Length: 106
Image (cartoon, rainbow, N blue to C red):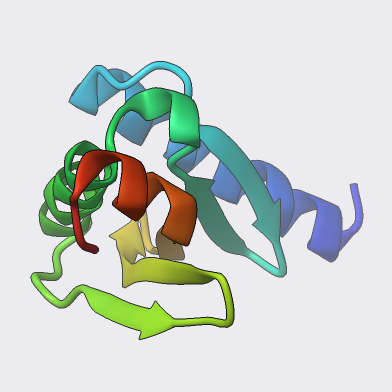
């Protein structure tokens, strides 16, 4: 196995263990360059629920910092922590039409 593939496989194993421990099905997980990327999809709930889930995952990954960045039609909620020694980027996207429908903010 080449080093890049080994790093990606190790990151995915760490992410799988993290998701099992936190008991969170339905997340989208990828790995690249030894880092783990976890996306909380819209199906995971309302904007407020997904933002709360991002905060919960961030805390489990060792950080309490949540960044909220506006975009042209959406807000991106992101946290960066560590999972099993790998950088972990946790993110969800809050679309403006969701905010209008629910009255929530990111």
